[in-house]
Image 1 (cartoon, helix red, strand yellow):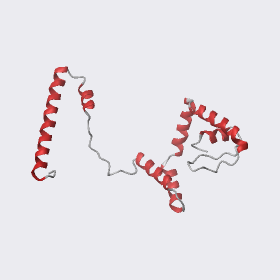
Image 2: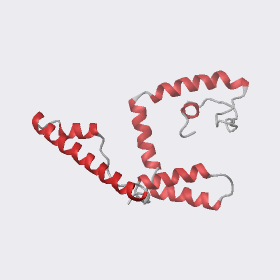
Image 3: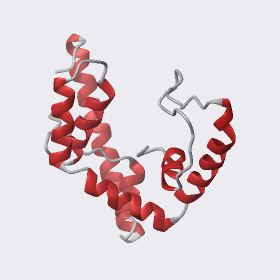
Image 4: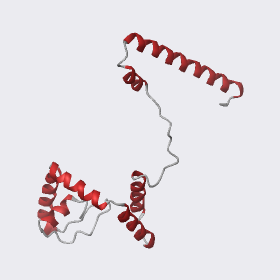
Amino acid sequence: MFGNATLSYAAAYDIELGDTSILDKEGNVVVQRSYRGKYQTCSVNGARLLRDAKVRDRITALLNELLRDDIVDSQLAKVITQDGDLQSKVRAINEYNKVRGRIIDKTRDVTERFAMDDVRELLAPLPQERQDELYAILTNAIAEAELLRGAAQGQDGHTR
C-alpha cells in the first residue's frame, strides 16, 4: 500500500477492493470487475489528497522515519538472502546509499563546466565595460586553446 495513493486511501478508510496483489505487465493493479467503482473512487480521492500540502508533509515525515540506514540495511540483508528478481529493489537501495553519502560514485566527473550563459550570469553584476573586457579575454583564450589542440592533432592525427 505504501507508495500507492489508491491503495493507501482504501486502507485508511477501510474500503474493500478485493485482491490487489495481481499486477499486469506494466505493474498496475488488476481490479476485479465488482470492485472497479470503489477502486476508481479511491483513485480519485487518493490523488486529490496528494495535492494537499498537509498530506504531502505527513508523507515526507513518514518517509524520513522509514528511510533510515538501519532499515535500508535490513532490507538489503533480506534481498541478499532471498531468491528471485530483485534488481529494482537493489538499485533503489544503492541509490539511497549514494544519496546518504554511504557510497561514493568514483566514476562521477567532478570537474565543473560552465556554459556561456553561466558566465554571463556570473559576470552580470559587473559594469558592462568590464564584462566586455572579460568576454574578449575568454574568447581569445578559447581560440588559442583550439589552435593549440588543432596543431597537436595535425602533427600525427592524434590528440596529445
